[in-house]
View 1: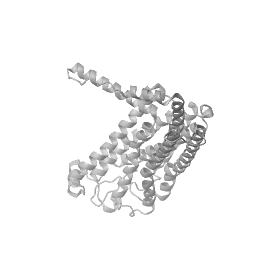
View 2: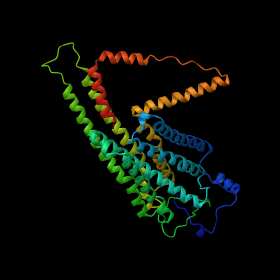
View 3: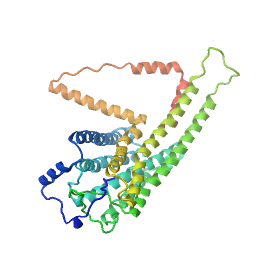
View 4: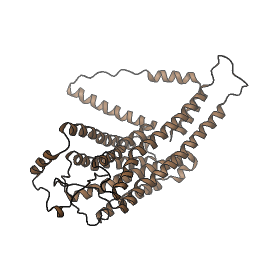
Length: 397
């Protein structure tokens, strides 16, 4: 999702070349830049925060899976693969995209431009395909938990992850290295009207349609179908729990509240709908606008403004920051692992401060555990077991 350059001119037709002196190039940029210093600072700070969140969040997910025994499950290998793709996208793509968008020219050379675009397509495709694999894994786990262990083995997961990255390489590096993505007759080193070098995502209509279908449209349809079936299954499961826990009585006694289990079923059903809505909604909001505009730009080079293309590109990039939150924080085991990791980091920091002689505030004991235990005892064992079973099956989505 590199930046598009509308109206970029060929170097041969203008008979000009990019400045060799970096100082001269910086002076030219300062004279013709359309962004003020305040705008550059604000945009740079905001986009840098997205990059830092993507890198740190995905590193935290990988560390949690590697260090926590409860998370060393076969299915979590998909989450590790997703985190690696998003972390690579943030480090190898988003950082150079930020520089390119702020400076409004490409200072890293024409050869690295193709490498950067290839990494962009590679990581974005791998991220989306991993999201699709996660949805399929959860569907099998929820729909057929008894056969899940036989269907989803370590070998199956490893081969599927390898197939995901192989597909991403075939969509990105192979056609770009063979120069099949660029329309014939277009220069590999375009410049704009100011004579500054540009790294333009100038695609042929065929490559734009084929790569968009493989990287987004087909996985998107699969994810929508799977999560729709998951939500319907969870809804039927909650309704069956309601039927099993319905009290056997002809009427209600005035002043007596209904059993709390039914209310918990309504809460679980609403939580399932909210979780599925967040997963699908964030994915669609981040990627649909870009991939629609990407195809339009391939057929009509001047129909999409540069700023609009850059903004929609960063919408897609931001999904790499949301993935650790959506696919990990909503999971209780990941949440507990994160708390333990932060606790160890805090303990190490406190010990380091004590060795340095810096006074630290003693941690106050929390009363939440005792209150939670008292509440759990007062609700009754049958209701608690029912709540845990229902929550595990519904929130596994």
